[in-house]
Amino acid sequence: MDSYTLWRRLPFPSGGSTQGLKMTYADLAEADEYITTVIRFVESGIFKPVPVDVLAMLEELMQRIDRLGDAASDGDQAVARSQHAYAALLHLVYRQFLEAGRPHE
Image 1 (cartoon, rainbow, N blue to C red):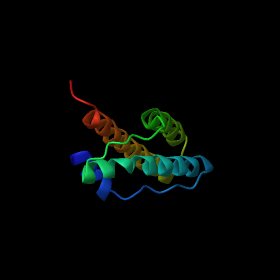
Image 2: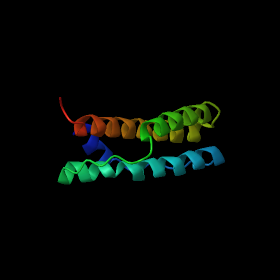
Image 3: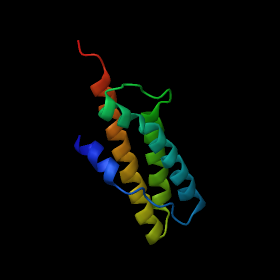
Image 4: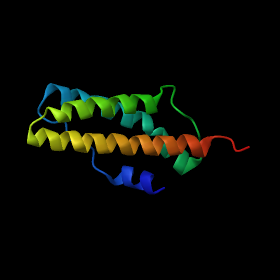
């Protein structure tokens, strides 16, 4: 619940000034939208994973953000770190959602 609460309260990161960071911003927004299914689970107990491999999507996105951050100016490096941290939090929230919703043996 701590990661869920943090995600719900954390502002969405900015897009930066480069085309690459603007693209990762858009992809991060798409992942964030997929992960809203977690809200239904927390508030209503409805476990309905999305038909997309969100975890793989986020892992690839974090790698792209890291590459962009390595070559970015100071201001965009901060944007890249913020985007990466947000993606990592989404990854944690969704992974915990999948673990919590699985039938227990």
